[in-house]
Length: 107
Image 1 (tube, rainbow, N blue to C red):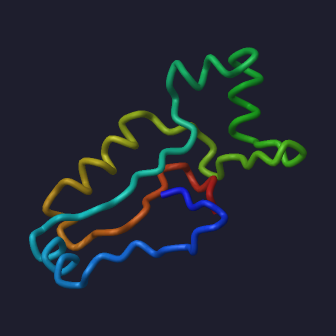
Image 2: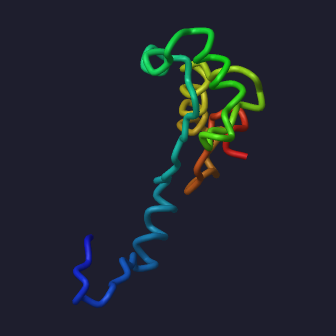
């Protein structure tokens, strides 16, 4: 909701019974945040393969870009496996989490 300056700010509220029903009904809400992933789109942003890859892995503090501590781009499968985990029974007690798949770039 966008508030007009003349309107008093309002807080969206979810009544506790609804929240409990969602949680006990096995609904979960998680977010997967991929970092730099080895895709054609990422490669299209680079001036050339060598410079682009090196700059992405190393980062550029002058441009406020962090590097990737693990030293490699994510493979699309890395991101997909996190999603598969969240959909599996192994993650049945994981909810309302934001998981970064970025090789440590968000540290």
